[in-house]
Length: 427
Image (cartoon, rainbow, N blue to C red):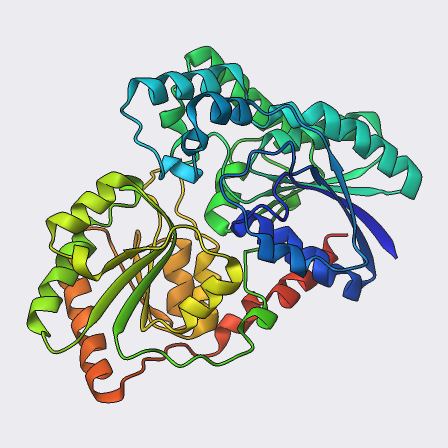
């Protein structure tokens, strides 16, 4: 079997979509005569925004996983200022206006480049060199964020005769919250130089959607386009191999982070309007993830607090059941001018075959996927009339049927096994 070393910071018991991507690839790669080895950080030294113990049960029993120490600035922040100061993606769990947070963001943005997990690099490098020699590994994959993981691959590529694949689950210097890091011009220049060096030296660059791939491709010279590939996130059929009946309420579920970057305010206004029109229907709006306090204020201002549930982070196993028992699923993507991609939750939404209401730009990757799979409708962030009309249509169907379904079966190409087929071809 071909051997590949997967270097990933996020691994169970860490939670989140970034964990699931390579956990699932590692699960299915042996079916394609590829033996994965995983190098990750020891949880005792890691700084995870959230944990999900249930994901540890999904690690294949024969998978070789190696863990190292790390020097974590976020653990120091957690010890000095409290665990709540360790941010989720996009800072959705913290208020950025406070003096302490401004100071911490400036320190992280200018003294820890490209990110606060850079302290893992030297430990991971040492262990990676040993594993490559011991198991005669010829291919290395690094996945980011944290993008400091790609610097491990860059160093290995310069030292050893390896094939190196860099996997980008998010953009680097174009991520929607990049300006929140308060970089100085010097720090930005250093960060962009590192990004470009990674893109130039990697043998293959994978992105999770077309928009991110095109963005990364634009950063290096013409002639290197062939090494860029798109392998989306997906869903594991094993996680959705049961049928769950929805409850009697009209339940709208949102999974993931939800902050002001997503601009969901118009949707709340629409939900308040339709609630008044359909007084005989019991509504529930729940968020499984992290929601900013300013977004919760908007929910309160629109009189929705009595139907709103903030569930916080829930285990992946519990989340799939919640999605399946929902009536409608809400999807949103952060507003950014650099790219308009698709986040991992979308593919699990598709697997439930529940209608999706998407708040995004109409020409985004996510909007195209929703159209392709006939899985719901996408709206611009200010399209109140369109959202209102569609939600009323769904409510009329709900009144007569009690359950809503959507989709044409095309979502199956986003199954983890099918996506691993595409990944295996890169080897």
